[in-house]
Image 1 (spheres, rainbow, N blue to C red):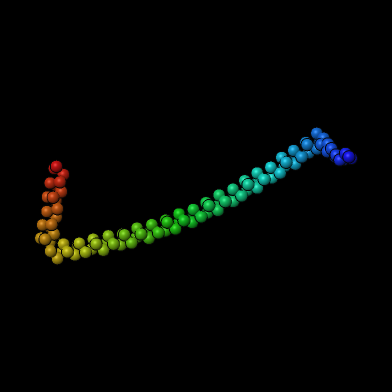
Image 2 (spheres, rainbow, N blue to C red):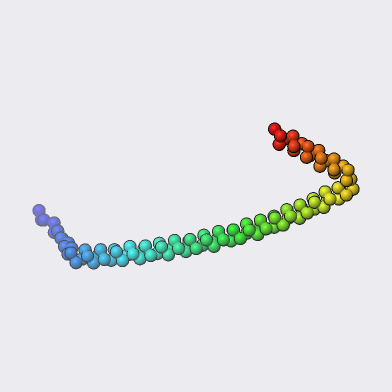
Length: 106
């Protein structure tokens, strides 16, 4: 029987150091890439949040303006009713005041 030829690979310390150096460079490059991707994603999320916040601010301003308009209309209606029926308005105000006084006494 013939013996199978064997090959022995010898790796020197210099080869290992070169491979480790290359590995460090690759890891460093990967870390930089991940950092850049994270920064880009963060900036994108900040822009999206700012747009949404601006939209909410505009919507709340519109809602406040509409509510102010409704309050003004109700105030005008109440003033009109008081002018038309002053004694009724006085009676209602006195009754409400009396009820509030009863509730606060207890």
